[in-house]
Length: 439
Picture 1 (cartoon, rainbow, N blue to C red):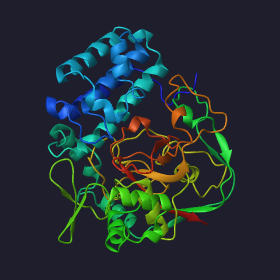
Picture 2: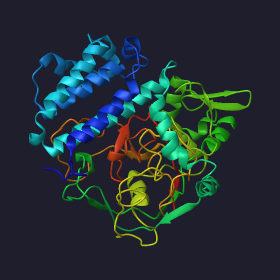
Picture 3: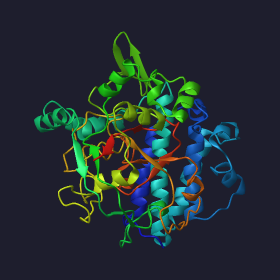
Picture 4: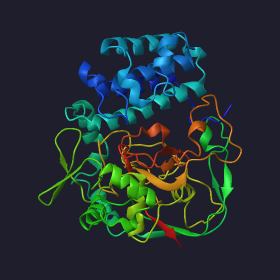
């Protein structure tokens, strides 16, 4: 049995909180909204909800409905066809979710903790995928209760004018980025077998890498920096783009990050209600790997490898290679409000440096998933865990690794060793970038 990242004590309480968040995002939506196909890149929301219930049923109760298993199997039903399926109605889907949960509750003492954690994190990850779709819907606004609580107690509150420390920290972080250097040497990467800790199969096994000396930017790339590049002809200067990037640029017709709106010298972000002014000192978001790579090239830099990223997030540069690793950029403790822009508290990015400094480069957890130069591949000695299709089908297929988590990521799955991945052309995801260079 693979190691577990966190013990699943009171598993039904955690599952209940997770389900409440899922339903809070969609409870007030109509049948038409839940069934709408906005883009072939994403499922109708009703499919995501049914899939969440079906995944829980299969892993905690066992399969007993071949028709539902086939309908909500992501490998049998690619995203582009899910809107054409005979999906359940809104009421039928909510009833299915409730029925499965009731059956799980009756078996609480027999629930396998590893599978339960897998089900919890699966649903939380689908929350983030659903938010990608919700941002694309012109008639959707975040639930007021969820957003108001965030404004009072989350990272938005930490950025208020009354918090002088947070304001000063943010101003300092938004200045020209510093380069933090890491010496060449042997660094331990990946998950180790720790009692009571959850890890995905693609994080295993822990092994030593020997990167050359490198430097990484003290913060992610900001909106104002990216906007300067856009207005300076970044999308027209093809010399900064890779051959594959040029092909993507030609087919996509992109002129700025997804959801940007630039009019009359002012820049806005669309989505989640009325367009909001672009925050100059917040990380740029919704850029593809091709865009991130071109920006880095244009600025005499590159994207970090995923190993360089993990080293920067996990180690204190003052101690050098071989030092004890941090579990999160802020340390080994659990996330709490103010440590990182996570957990859907702000419904968007906030100025860098608002969250508490940790000694690591700023804003490495939350805000935006950060593209790396690495292709998604198996670590030495890889062995699939119980969910065999989680990682293996995506290895060596052109997917690029992202690290860190975004504002939409639930904090439970955030860990310096967690590996996200997507195709380089994708930008509906909450992705940004951080620069690196050889030391």
